Image (tube, rainbow, N blue to C red; front, top):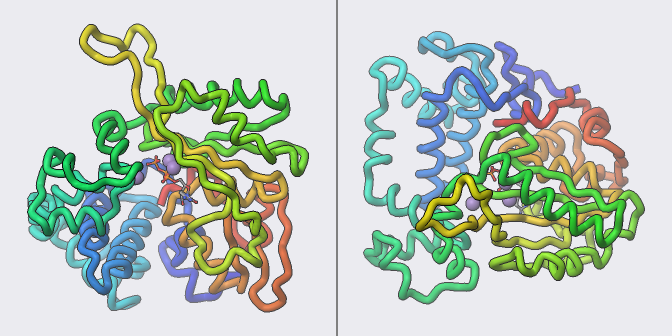
Length: 371
Ligand code: CTP
Ligand code: MN
Ligand code: MN
Ligand code: MN
């Protein structure tokens, strides 16, 4: 069972993967503020950027798991990553929450939101293929608008990212995601009738909208998923505006995937899909389609439950379940599988439920992983 330290009071546990974190919770005014601070810390790219960003995310995850609205500073007592008696890093979270509870807003958060730096970094990071380091380089060179970027040297992702900027920054609705999913399903059926297409990412957690569509492609017979992706891409070539195919490295067993736990080794395709819009939503001067980011990931069936868990998110949930697993269970968990760190013994599982069970975790359905 988890250590005592990991079971703090108020029912909010130390590892976000132990908590029930629904999509709709009671403290979004506070968590929105903490997530602005998280993003700002991440944008700054200074020495402790990552750990500072993480501290804000952990505080936010705690508040999302609180089964009631926080209305007083007193009720922050014993909350992991917020109550300062539990951790020194929690101080900043507590300070900002206190400001908002007592004054209705936080000067620090308001200043960030209104800053040239934050606004510009958000604008540039909204270009597909642009991360904070590129965005910051451009900001430091004095660029402030998308127009300033057009004549710079861009890579392929960034070029199309800029070209379809508006569409790609318009949320993808659940209906649009289901539409894309059906189109992919149809071509998969033509290739092999038992191919399975699963909508994962935010939509599997129940989000009504997202920034892309994540689809796992698998087959109930091990090996039958091989060579499927090029065929899918060929059949969909008129539906794609852009594709970036990543080869499988072949070394998918967790024992051999090395350190980087965030990047998996599945054969996959990051694409921009051209989705035809239904007539009713078309208006005269608008183009009759929408560019949508679609990720296709091909998963061998023996790794399916792990890929399902890994691609359902959130990113923070994944980070937390891997931290819990490593620290509390001495097990390495990836999107490919899990194995014990000491004996390097692989631990099998056929379902997500079985993975949680073998890790002594209470099962959390996707809708409760919204941390
Ligand atoms: N993921 C991953 N490897 C990648 C990209 C994403 O394992 N190369 C995982 C992420 O950790 C996340 C899930 O896949 O848990 C979905 O990622 P993403 O589409 O970025 O986020 P969503 O949660 O789907 O949010 P959104 O609705 O904004 O797309
Ligand atoms: Mn993105
Ligand atoms: Mn997604
Ligand atoms: Mn994605």
